[in-house]
Length: 259
Image 1: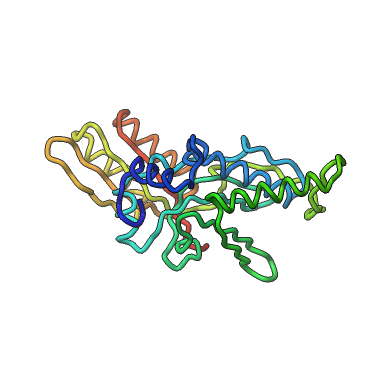
Image 2 (image 1 turned 120 degrees about the vertical axis):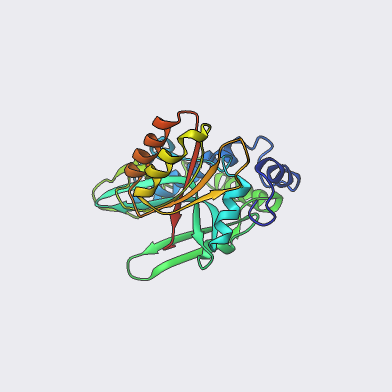
């Protein structure tokens, strides 16, 4: 989708041909697979259980070629990310597609490759990149797990190293994070006569409002970049838009410019 502009279903079919998603790709495209992995990583990092239900999970199936075109025009790249961040003593976690800059290390992670980035207090960002899908990486991971089970000789598996010795952390979904972000919003109202009202709603908190691919007699599509606002303010804006046109199609993507 990012490189040749194909729609979601065509791109998914090609990915399945080369064996990157599961035969049933629902967990891959919905973000649930990544959320399970993220919850395990957080549980190890914090030495306390983090359940996937505590994460905000958004998949890639709502993305359209126009989203990738808009991103490319502004030197952004769309990537599915699983993120964990601590703010004011709370841990915010989620899985979602995001906009990153072309200068981000994540922008060059393609096809079956994954990247893991740890932002450390004293040494900055530490990054590990490697294959995360396909026949051989999957077989390698399975054999590694089987070897650990065999070596345990029926004894319980060794628990993870305790990395955190502080007080327990309250986990919240990423959409509860109070930090402000810029957001890309794709809005396709069903009722063209609501155009002026919807423009006015977005204009208050937005840096850019652009009409995209208008089709005569069938309404219009807006591509919007908001000013830095918390998720709560974004949802207030979207609720207001939907109050004018309850049938409008609205999607959004967070813009992460510091990773």
